[in-house]
Image (cartoon, rainbow, N blue to C red; front, side):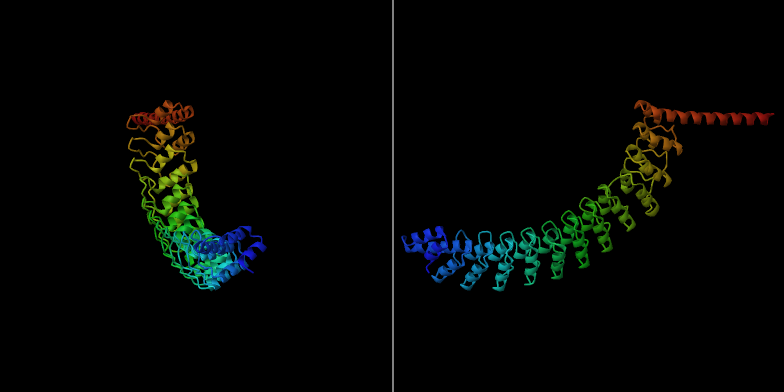
Length: 443
C-alpha cells in the first residue's frame, strides 16, 4: 500500500491532499513534500504511514520549522513511531530552535515510555538546551518525579548547571517530593554548588521552608555556613522565615550562630525583628553572642520592643546583658519601654532585673517622664510604686507632672500629685520629728 493509499484509508485528508499535489510539482518540491508528510505523520502518531514513508527513503532526520519527526513523536508520546524512526536512523540528539532534543521533549511532556526508549537507544542525556537545562533539570522543574528516578538510574551528570547556575539538586528542593529528593541525594551530587545568587541547596531549603529536605541535606554533610551574595546563610534565612524546625536542625548540625550578612545582621537579630520569639529563645539558649549587633539599641531593647518579658530575663540573667546599657541617644531599655507600648510584664521584668528607675537619656528625660508624656497610666503607677523620683527634671527643667498637664492626662496628673503630696507630707512629718527631737533635747 502506498503512502497516498494509507492516508486516504485512514481518513487523513490533509496528508492525502499533499500526496496528490506532490506529483504535480518539480523533484525538489517532491522531496520537501515527502518530508512534510513524515513530519505530519510523526506528529499524529500514524505508525503505518511513517513506516511507508521511511521505506520510500524519506530521511528520518528531516526537519520542519527546526523540528524533527522524532521530536514530534516524543512530544506526542508515540512510542511505536519513535521506535520506527530510531530503527531507520533518526538522530536522538538533534535539537530544535530551543536547543531541545527528543529527550527534553519527552521529559517535558511526561512521556515516560518514550524517555526510556530514547535512553535505551543511547541518547546523550546530558545535553543542555538554550536555558542550560539538561533532561534531569527539566524533569525536576516540571515535577516529573517518576522520570527523575528513571533518569537517575541511567547515571546522568548530577552537577550540570543551567544558565542561572541551578543544579538539579537546587531545583529539586522546590519541585520534587521528599522521597525523590532523597534518591537524588543518594546518587551523590555536590551539595555545595552555588547558583549565580550564591544559593546552595541548603539555603534554598531554608528559603522555601522545606524542613524534611533540609534534614536530608544536613544528614549528607553539606557546608552549613556558606553565604549567598547577600552574605546570608541558611541559618539566617531560616530565622528570617520563622522556620523553627530548620533553625533547630541547623544549630544541631553545627551552624555558626553569629555570622553577619552584608547588612551586619545575625540570625538572632533577624529572628527578633521578624517577631519569631521561639527562635530567639532557641538561639539564646544555644549560645549566640548577644554583643554582635548592628543595631545601636542592642538586642535587649529589641526584646523590649517585642514585649518579650521572658526573653529579657534570659538575656540579662543567662547571657549577662547590661539592663542599664544606654544607646547612642542615652536611652536604657526601661526608658525605651516607656516610649513605646511595651507590656507591663515586660516593664516588671526590667525592674526585677535591676533597671535603674531614674536613669536619664541625652535630653535628661526619665522613664517616668516619657510614660507621663505618652499617657501610659499603668506604667506611671508601676514606676511610682517602684520608687521612681517624680521630681527629676529634664534638660528643659520640666518634670513628669508638667508633661502630664501639657498632654492633659488627668489620671496621671492625679497619680503624680498623690505621690507628691505623700512625699511632702512625709518630709513634713520628718521635719516635725526632728523638731520634737531638738526640743526634747533642749529640755
